[in-house]
Length: 239
Image (tube, rainbow, N blue to C red; front, top):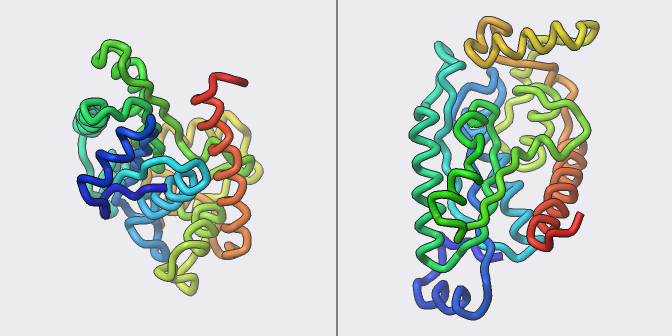
């Protein structure tokens, strides 16, 4: 793995010239995650996912884009960019990578609110670059069996595995969907994409009170294994 932010220009140009390189761009967000998790949670988790993927497959790791589309969390704290802004940043970065002879790129997303911004990003860049770039876009939670949450059991466990900033003594139950039908959960999800506080007053979807570092490590292992294999499949073209 090469974390490019700490590298010197001559070294980077040398390794790019020596063989075809693959770059990874993580995208997170700055937004509330209940009273017990830092506002950087999405960025922290996706940064670690991307780091481990790069370590496993020897990719180039780019600095995380820490700001995402989080307007739905207001009036809780959030720092957001418009979806058009995020998409433009990603297009510009990928085109810039192409100019530096890095033509294969994985964009790894860590926040649900970014989904519209990254939708069809691969096709847009294929057209913009005149088929010179290969861009693959993934949201990391799609590579685990456990249903994801927001500041609940899964996300809190993931943070316990990588951060010392979790305040478990402040953790509390949020929206619990056990017993609800799939239709009811889907309806709540649609409301949450527009106003998260309308479905959960404390900003939590799920129950983080029993989260553990051990479970977080298991989740990371599952994600890295599945996503890592997917990335390699994209490069080889084999299913």
